[in-house]
Image 1 (cartoon, chains in turn orange, green):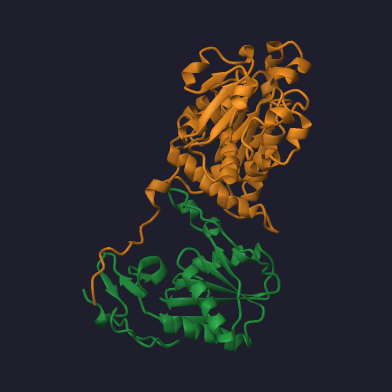
Image 2 (cartoon, rainbow over the protein chains, first blue to last red):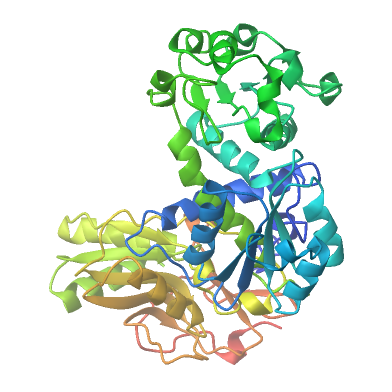
Length: 325
Length: 197
């Protein structure tokens, strides 16, 4: 009988595989390991969405509050579906018809809500930094579902999952992000995530829709979409955000389409096997042509599908376990 | 261990009158090689190809609220229908029965099998749930503080069953060089006196 000190011991959870934060407020503050952990977990969550019974009991008895201070369909539904598939209880809260319309501040609303002991708050807010404020003040997990023109981390994670599934990797890919970069929290989060994971990002848009000092992000910047698309593996088209003043940045929809719209001809400038992405909602005939949006390279609906899996992964990692040592 | 899995496959075939309608599901991580080996035995014995699934029970654990960090989730791969089938769950060690409880819940989310059976290499006793295995490689009496670990050739280099105590000294239940015929339903070896301190 021999002693086998090399035998893998039955260790408890491997600490290198633990999400390192209490909240998910931005991509900037999370590590590459955290990103990889979310993506791998989401990959496993995808399987649940294909079952006959699309529900697991993991978050039974946990309460998630969805605070949406800005209109949203896709993201809100995606979070709600994710919460239900994990058996969490969820409550929806929007500013219309609530105490907010009576003048309550965000922090007061959240503190009152905290008295109802949610395990997580999913927050969308028009002010950049609002989730960070809540994360500092409240003990529960805060998930940023889009804050102003700052970040939209779960969108970047679902985009990364979609790219990784299509291309098998993120590192070394050439990604073109085209459109209203100045107003886009999607662009900001994607740029952060993709750069962290070793992809080369080119940002493209009319000069009026590129933020000042954009070169400091380290990304390649161009105002010619043809240049951005050249040999790209991934083409990510952004929406012109008229509600945030994006419409003032160019003369007309028609002209935008002529100069920056992703047409089938322009699509051919990218690699033959390139994928086309759009975070939605699309303005067909403005930033993207229908023939491309519905074309064989489009992964726009996969993005939506992966959104549920990514949000399940984030909720599981943040509040699946108790968090107490 | 080879003998134990061969006998286990034989018993499953005998009890079910063949391999018709049987599907194997290995519980991650160490139930999976067992399920694969039983499937190989089925192929050898009956020339039958039995589908093998992989189940991760993490999302069904009953202790998530008592642990500090969410355990790593691995993929569940059950690419065949379980509806109306005889599902044989495979795991390396049967202990409290909590893993098996979670696995049963998980399988039911894939459909309504005709029956679920349980096959384990080692039954170490000390159940906390009313759960029993129909097919057991070997029964070993253990204390609560001991750890039973199964190693496989394909994942760890060799087939063996190890009894570890908390002080982390390791004692093979089978001496590596003297494999022992493993009998079902009988406590063989692993008596207290045989363990080295």
